[in-house]
Length: 262
Length: 169
Image 1 (tube, one colour):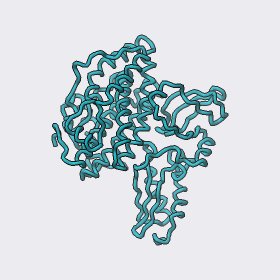
Image 2: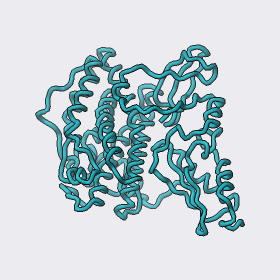
Image 3: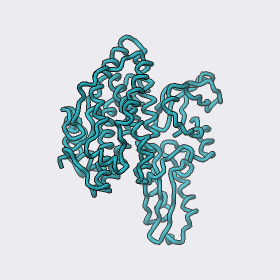
Image 4: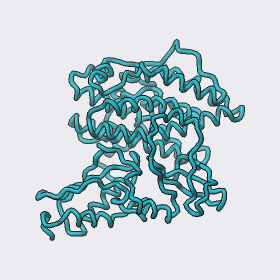
């Protein structure tokens, strides 16, 4: 089941691959956000992060369920619980440990903004009725995630010395993980041909300029390095963090595969 | 046991109106716009539903409640199908439902706007949500996320009452 450099042959294969890539990003980041439950800096933020986690895991669940139907797998849980780290196609940005609140907010902002541009285009081009309907639903929720995380970037950046230095550090640290969002490999190229994915390189400058204007408004500085960008996670070469995350997320289901909520 | 073919769609819709939303019990699943279609054939009854929010944990309960209700009415061979083709919007909530929400103390959703310029508008001012208790416009947003995925939290500066708003999506 290794997935290094998969080249989808047909439209159906390309669709399954896209569903899994979108879903993996959302499941893993959703899980990271869920780690905040009970640990938020205040009650409102605890609730907000749990809500966003719920949305993202919900997005993943719908996408996996659809992929399971197309790919003759038993159900969405198969993809979440019974694959190993090498099979996950999420980008490394989503799997990094949750860090402090500033780190979580920064990651959410960068990812939600990327998702905003991506979904905005996908809902215009995807022909599959069910898939398109899902994307439209998710798009509405992404707007809330983006608004929420952007507000916090402003508040932390233009806040105290402490909050400012923490969020600037978070941007500096996370910037090298943003390159993966804009990489196009053979599978993405096949999907673009089938109108199942967007040529993300087209709107990368727009994405960057929105990040930049938000940072300026927040009295922060855009990290000025592009030389080194992390790569490889999309094709299974993950950071060490994903294995630890999966161990925690999957162990119960794997130890008791037939367990049911009563 | 009523023969399936003898039951009218209207009757089933009226049964479904008896199923309340587990998280907002004053509303039923029909006026929420969750039930989209009902099909009756000799093979059984199909109830087509669509989720409100992607991560809404109430969806499983709603599915179960619908199945139990129809069973209690003596109907068998009921299938509940989740359909995504049209994304749920608060515009599908009936006026009656919005009135009941306000009476319940939740500011109802307004009509959704087409926000093609979402990114630009992000930098604009927040919209004002009227207080469901005293109708004052002197309110402020406290958090985009409330006790459930579908609600945000606000505070009324006039009657000093915190309240929730059903977000419009």
